[in-house]
Amino acid sequence: MEQEELFPAEKGHIGTDESGKGDYFGPLVIAGFFLPEGQEEVLKELGVKDCKRLSDNRVIEIASVLKKGYIYSVVAIGPERYNALYKNLRNLNRLLAWGHARAIENILERVNCVEALTDQFGDQSYVREALLKKGKKITLVQRTGAEEDLAVAAASILARAEFLLRLKSLSRKVGLELPKGASPRVEVAGLKLVEKYGSGILEKVAKKHFKTTERLLGQVDLKREEKK
Image (tube, rainbow, N blue to C red; front, side, top):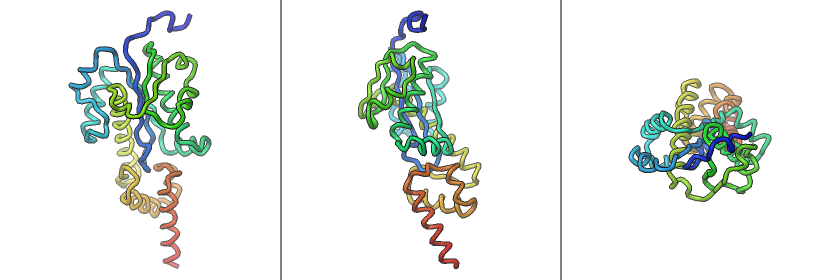
């Protein structure tokens, strides 16, 4: 007999969100969070809101509290794995869908829930297709601005906290601060890395399909020509 038949569905819903999608350095992180019915006010008191409206330190603080009291899942795809998956899929939305689906499935292993909410990205069918047997029975809702939902907001905080911690760890490993985003500062750091370790380092620390890679390698080639 399947778990859904043994245990009635718990009241509440799952929210998922991702972090690192627009950051050249670091992983792509997708998190899922189960918000039990009646816990909305508790999350509001904790300061849960879309992570983009919080400082990095506050994100990490709130994430540590959420991890202690709620059911959640964090799926982190490091740069090397990300680059390999992207090479095969050639589609960021399919990669995102895979991560959101895994986060939902991981939570469903621990709680019998019937609804999940995620932000809208790409074709809605991507996440549905990526869900495995257990997830096929859940009602999946995708909409723009989903971060206004507290479960999605909590997931955004968990995903961002994991991204920040992993980016800091990567920075320590290479001996250089790896900036967030994809700004000119990122290109400066990337140039220093390539000059120090060679272009192969980008496979280990960056999302290589970004146009930043092409610009970086172009600058490296230009410098080499100038030295001749």
